[in-house]
Length: 362
Image (cartoon, rainbow, N blue to C red):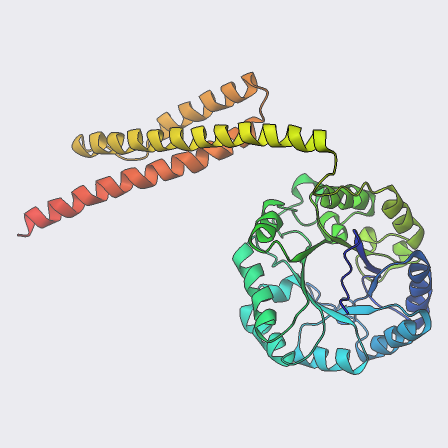
């Protein structure tokens, strides 16, 4: 029987760290009464700097084992070493998750996968700290390759310098969207606690995850968050978690409203037509770019001309505002187009350079 249910959202909740037996039991009692599907707790904590609380280890596993037996609540913990896996299995953990700082290291992920060869246990893989969808997918594939049948992805945001947008970790939604495009059958879980770093914004990000058809949520929950031994600012009380979940609007991917279906199909056909036109126009633009590269080659000019690019950026921004489009979006789009244009022109200039060398060295 699968641990991951199809009901949305699949809710994983519990404290950042298993601090004491009393804290674990109190939290488990509250969450089991709410119908939370999976209890999470940090047993070994990978901290940025030494001297901070790094978890209670095997002692905490005893508390989780007791809470599981008392409240019939499945348990999950983070593992970062094969020895962690051995202890997790010994104490009857129902699922494991791989942290973002571990996912970034393929060697360590492979060690963990090898330790799980032949073991039937669900594994959840958090995104790597850097924005690399291939690295994320590669970690997932390593666990699948050793026979893990239930693998899920957890989106917890990506590290960056500073707190742009007020997030602890940048959501970078296109990364989980791309992973889901490649692996549509993969369960996608959002971790609003680590994305926001602030309990006040957890509901906002949880709703966005539901709007983007994520299947699950992982939310750090503590009876007294302000007294938490780690990540106090991003934990909520069980009562607040209940409030967040009760106010979520869970949208469906499809609808049985035939008038809505027909309207969507009409709009999609229009959009497909426009997309085809955009690609055709881009092809013509790149053809012109190639001809410009030939002119620059013959006139011994550089491919990149900063003054011309600045002029293009200004014009694009003005036109974007005219059509009420975010200028940041349009400029970012044209940066991609300009990069490809320059790449093509550089190839033309490089060909001339090779021909010149060949003529000088017959």
